[in-house]
Length: 367
Ligand SMILES: NC(=O)c1ccc[n+]([C@@H]2O[C@H](COP(=O)([O-])OP(=O)(O)OC[C@H]3O[C@@H](n4cnc5c(N)ncnc54)[C@H](O)[C@@H]3O)[C@@H](O)[C@H]2O)c1
Image (cartoon, rainbow, N blue to C red; front, side, top):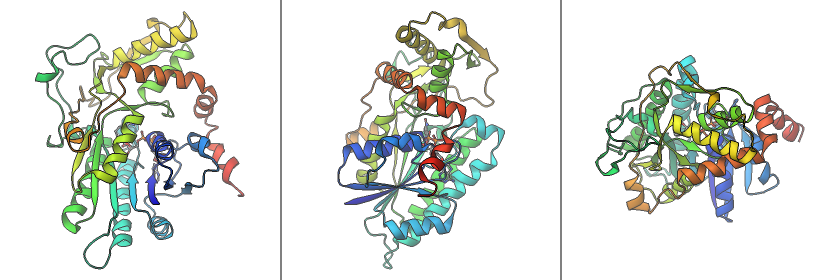
């Protein structure tokens, strides 16, 4: 039986990953380390309550003793580091915590793994560390001359994409911190032979995403007839990746990726923000039959400072080496996602009212 230590497993992607892995594999154990910041929500994991294959540890990746103890106690084969401050707007308002968690937290985790896995012969056994990175480290791409009405390139063959070899050029404090973390991981591999691999994914969407991010925010506001704030002209393009496709990629890279390598994980699902907002309005209106959900709710607001214009990933390497490809087209994934938010009003209520934070105390205090 293999043991995975997953950090940030109560957040959006981390919790989807924990659920995905326990669905796909019977013979694994997951130790889930999460500090439960505002973005950590144990209600995401309510469906696996009582499953012995999942152990939750309320701990901070910056805490050397807690991480060393967790590694000694559970002896994980794999460590997958999702834990991070993840919201660009928050990083613009308060960059310090991003350096602290994303950079120093990663360095602490690397040090603890290095000490725990050292076999005394200059090696680390069969252990493997995966750092979950982002396409934002590459900076921005230009919008192609010819685009489809949804914002995707009309001529994908002759369009620029981020590749693993694209120079790093982060613009926001968030992406600078993630770039720095990736470089520490690379340095530990290159200097100590530390068994690490890095994935860099595009924008994820799906169930359990905190409603400060574009898609859940728009769904939530549309359902409540609130304004739908769109940054600038709304023509910024992101490459949307359905979260389960991302989880599958991490599963494959964790066990099969070549150490010291970077793998881009992207959807070839580029869409302009304004198109995303319009598809959400159309789908919510269709499902609810509510005529007040219409494009009159859209309000263009002052653009985000340093807002990257376009992200687009070439996931050729992961496809060629590991056979991964994104299975979920945007049009299918967005409908699944909207239906999930409509079917889970309690989860949304608890998150938006803040009462999800009492869940931990309710479920775990005094146990
Ligand atoms: N969401 C995306 O579209 C996206 C895209 C590219 C990369 N990523 C990366 O994927 C990872 C997960 O992103 P997400 O959207 O799930 O983020 P999230 O903000 O939803 O979750 C982050 C989780 O990390 C936990 N955490 C924060 N600081 C911690 C600390 N010091 N110690 C332990 N736990 C801590 C939080 O409590 C939370 O559960 C991040 O590394 C992020 O940079 C996300």
